[in-house]
Length: 126
Image (tube, rainbow, N blue to C red):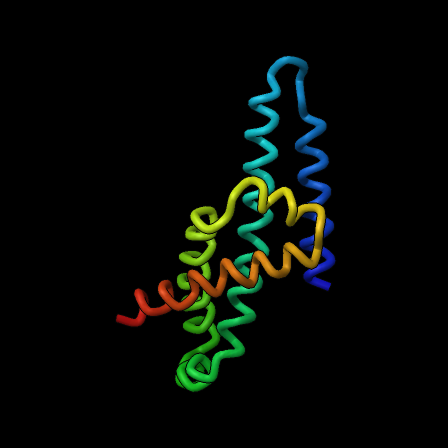
């Protein structure tokens, strides 16, 4: 359900952003489309990050000693880091492809999270 919602949201956002062209100022519309696309992409990254954290055995062991509030704080901190690093790992072309192709989007999000998750998690546990 989350994947469908994120997919639909990303596609609708990019379409609506493309419709915001105000005549000759296409640079602004493209900038807005890129910004909206990146925000939706970051949300997908955050969802995938949280899912991957919960699937790690080290997390399951560590979280056993945490309260729910502490777990959420750690997830927010680590996945916030991952989401902030995401733009460094994708191009506008990749974002465009992700908006059109759900399978590509899933692979891209998984790849970006994998690149960033370990480094962010390690930086917060030191």
